[in-house]
Length: 368
Image 1 (cartoon, rainbow, N blue to C red):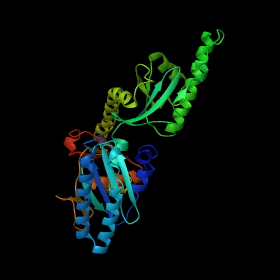
Image 2 (image 1 turned 90 degrees about the horizontal axis):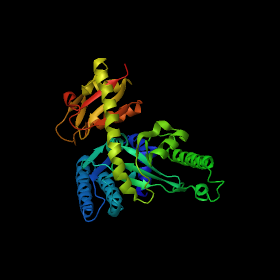
Image 3 (image 1 turned 45 degrees about the vertical axis):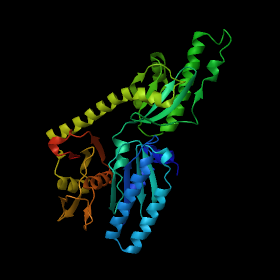
Image 4 (image 1 turned 135 degrees about the vertical axis):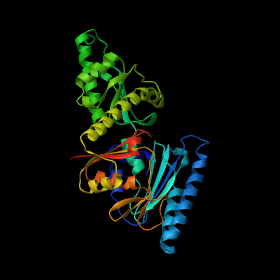
């Protein structure tokens, strides 16, 4: 499948993420690596991927019988061979078991690693959805509108059908009668209302923020007709940039979105601090696991880049020093707990390193 289609599934509909995180079966192989968008840097991506596939093959030979290991290795090698490194993003993830062979490319940096478990390691997909800022930029003027999808400072794509949209009625204002001020206002309001409905068709029922790129007058005119004001960022990127390249617009927009993201993170951190005061906070991993299994955990807070091999022994989480080839050892206990909590209707918040230092990088807010 073309990588934009994967991205649409993961970042927009989340169908791919939900599908992969629900898989529970032996021999789930996840290969994760950083990649590059540009040449010649992207030339090394194929080499890194080959080395990780070799690592996966070696671990399979240790863990499984030769027939199973060979079958899974061949399937993994075939999938790796289908990757077109000319169209890489910031990261690449391969998912393989007996039934599944899928690729996801993401605009986020990851940690190169191989995970073999009875579930897929979807943490980096969850991180792409939850930690990084996924947003739309509506480039708006009285004459037309464009819609650009972005994550952080990277363009994902500029939307086609139903965009771009042209205000044909406004451009045909030729007669003095049509140019009357009231009629002009009506035509602009009608056009902005039309654009707003097209934007909502793309966003559907997802709470993805929209940043307006326009002048102040048009920003407030659009707000008057917008059906979902809650999704519109309370600031705007000045000037209409109908002729600018999408990535140039995104680069400027990210300066505003960084502030928006920081404010959002501060709001979520305040929930954590309030939970500590209300005695609704847990930091012991075993206690968190037991609370999740009872449906008590609302939100997990975890520092970005935190991974921990572990095993469950006597219903307690026991940390291990290395990713495991041993029985019962999972490569990342936090990944498992995140997936468990999502299945119980909870959520996860990723914070920069050091933000949860006093809690060893991991904690949970309980419902009661």
